[in-house]
Amino acid sequence: MRLALPAAAALLVSTAAFAGNPPVAADAGLSYGPRPAYLISKLPEGALKDKLQSCLGQTPQRTDFSIGHRGAPLMFPEHTAESNIAAAQMGAGILECDVTFTKDLELVCRHAQNDLHTTTNILTTDLAGTCVTPFTPADGETPAAAECRTSEITLAEFRSLQPKMDSADTTALTAEAYQGGTAGWRSTLFAGDATSMTHAESIELFKSLGAKFTPELKSPAVEMPFNGFSQADYAQKLIDEYRSAGIPASDVWAQSFNLDDVLYWIENEPEFGKQAVFLDASYDLEGFDHNNPATFPHDFAALHAKGVNYIAPPMWMLVTAENGKTVPSAYAKEAKAAGLKLITWTLERSGPLATGGGWYFQSVSDLTADDSMYYQLLDVLAQDVGVEGVFSDWPATTTFYANCMGL
Image (tube, rainbow, N blue to C red; front, side):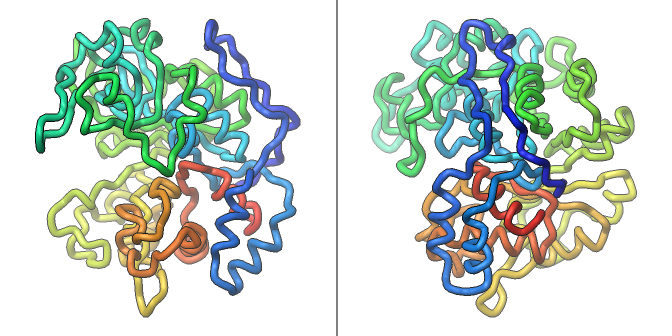
């Protein structure tokens, strides 16, 4: 996944799939924007800063090392055409559609089957009545709440919803106020008239942008089979939409937190299965320690023997703090020794890092004092851990690094 591709002469977007509300036209070239230079300026003096500063005048090139995580949701509504066009303009070589399904079994791009109440305006529309948990206002110490699912609405109804930044104001007393809550370090500047996508439309768009594909089969919020639609049907339909679009398996990294999905692809779609990515949620298990192999729930060698070639844990599981430095964790070493390729997530999903970086930086929080840690961690992940790609909420940062380092 480290092949750097030349910038396309033009990124022309087909708008046929978005009739009535086409996405904005893509730029004719790639751009890093100001953020990489800003982060470099925060780095302490040393070899990494010198190297990155020496590349400030370089021409951006698309690279598969840089993966758009739901597009570029630092500033654009996730899983929209606009978010992914922005990620492509930043040089992301691979783009993500998290895949779930509607009531009429159409595949759509959505981070979770049950996130419509935070990612769309459903609570302020006539479709609010479809929500499995209607909006309830905040009451004393009890926060406002709701739950709305794609599986409760048809594709036509899904298309009628307006995407927004993923957020909720849990102090809200009205559904309208609940639409707020966007983190202060994000922006609603590009949220107006954003365009949602089906999975098939994401394939068309990403192909037109010169990018490759990493769809994630999301865990259903409903019991399966759903209206006769089994988990195997779901996993197969995802692959079928790439086949129908004529996309080669070598351009697709299908993902799932469900190991059975990955094994299904390996057995039933072996060409796609070669690059299927097992998303590792071992962190959810009591007693798990990313530095203690005795606590690892998966035998990495056994996974590889079953045909699993890629594993993707969060960034913090791959590193640890040792003698004041960020170094590879036992998890990273064991996975690599077993022959597994590593992808990781998610850079720039944490906001300002002055307070330690939160969940994604938890294993190196004592070393995380400011935003320069974004590049310091990325450098360790790339050079010492040897990851194949990094998901980012603002792919320009990762693209710049990969271009500078020749990844």
